[in-house]
Image 1 (cartoon, rainbow, N blue to C red):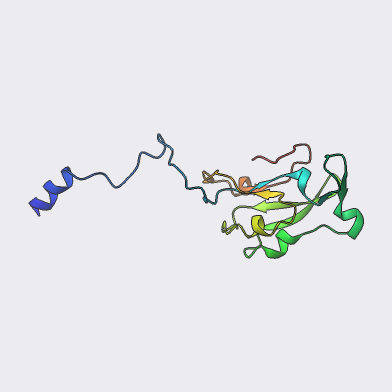
Image 2 (spheres, rainbow, N blue to C red):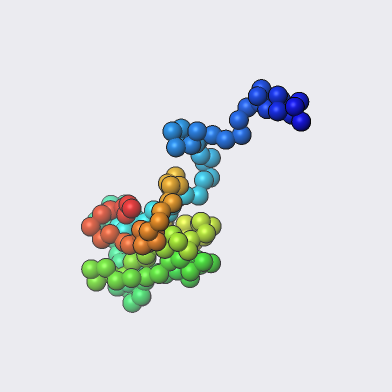
Length: 137
């Protein structure tokens, strides 16, 4: 037992200094998803940003592929300023990124945000912000 105790003095610690030193994340890290309001349900008709068409005006409903494909049912469509947009519930999300992969307009993207720990469950619900070009928490 004494040998084992002495050997641990010369070994590298197994823990990191996390709060003070941020970890280096791999390229394929799955953090909090980001939602771009200006890209959702929009079809680009030309090379300029002024030639766009809203999917809802043609079909009558939103795309909702992200809601359909989410295995944890963590995305729901809510109405904001007369437009229906996805709302993300990170308390249910398993970070599988199926929504990112299946979004046809690339309105849902990945991020490196990983500090989601909280005691307030309501702060884990990410509502769409119609006034911003990209939603942030």
